[in-house]
View 1 (tube, rainbow, N blue to C red):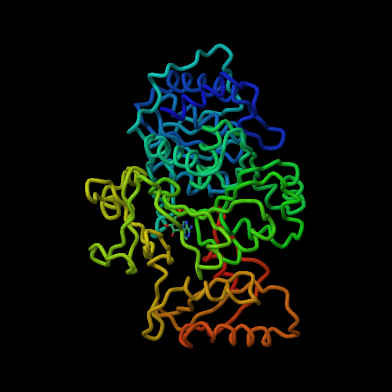
View 2: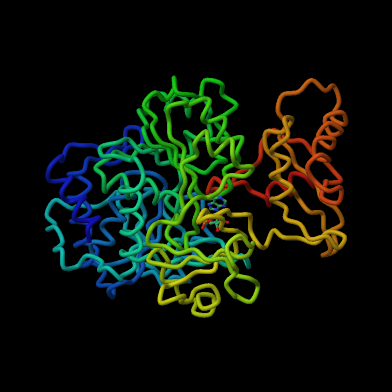
Length: 501
Ligand code: AMP
């Protein structure tokens, strides 16, 4: 596999170069390669798992995580990255559902999981171990990693990403984005979220250095900005919510991060206002909006957000498809819609993954074939105009209120346009199944109103210029911040709990 061969070349040519660092915990390309090769043969010899048996890799952002990932795939096993922020009950469910044959624990703390072998990376003795032979590496159509996403029923689904899927994604990133080589990449998303794949493998394939920001650093603003200031980060990958969280600090700009060249966003809507603010704070950096689900290997569309685009568009598009991908828009029964009509986005091509592990029915529902290509129905509403894809929210956020059909994200979009609002989320109030009214949970910008009701009146007036009356929320609540999920996206569930507290 090209990705592995290329990492081996970096290890041979620049063995001392840092591949991954988290504070004082750092690892060079030479060590990363050597340790993972030895660990791979130890796994093969000690546990005798059948080829392609999944292995859970548990931990946060230490160097043993990338070492373990590479060790698994070099021995021919897919890994399941599980972050420490995932509750133990759910970890046990993932271990059980996936049929994992081994858990690699990188935390140094004992895990409360029964009936499975556990390998502690802390105690590993690899001095006498031989490196594994290349014959064992995962093959093109083998599964490389499995990422568990939350299913709508609360049952996590394991998306199986093959070596070929990952290679296709990594090549697109390194060839079509201005990432260059030898760059410092920020690694902010936990490994259990596929956004992390957007920095990890492009960085390793291009001989760059991953600079991890772990959850302790992120949770303390002073430490976070000190860390960023000393990081030398050149490529930034995060959700829009994460960068928005940095905005209250007026020093978060090109003076703090003078080497920053490229922002890559994925995972949720990139609001126009966020892109504009970034352009002001980082006038020389390029900003990319990318879109895609875990089921189609991280991202399948992209666009550079230029001044021209910002002045032309009301809502940012997610861009043009990755060259080897086709994107279609279909109606409720799956029939293709003509260009310009809104429907469900369907993705087809080599980024589409193998489906959900051990869930043939769920896989069949969402995955299929179109014109000889593997396809995936996203559940995202969207439209294509002149080849440009616009993602218009989840189909499942479409609601009916007093008979009117509307999309929560449509209202949120207009709220976010208001000069009084930093960010906002709409929460439907549905005490008995049916939605009675909408609540706008708002993080306000600084304002001069003495009373909240005056602010509400001003926002209502603003909204009335943009939305029909039936879409204007009945209630407005004010908050200091929008809570984030562990994946760094807006946490609607928690916001709802806060609103109803
Ligand atoms: P995940 O599998 O966690 O990455 O979530 C994928 C979903 O996030 C997609 O199906 C979209 O609903 C949403 N998403 C990802 N990127 C974008 C984007 N750039 N704009 C709007 N929604 C996005």
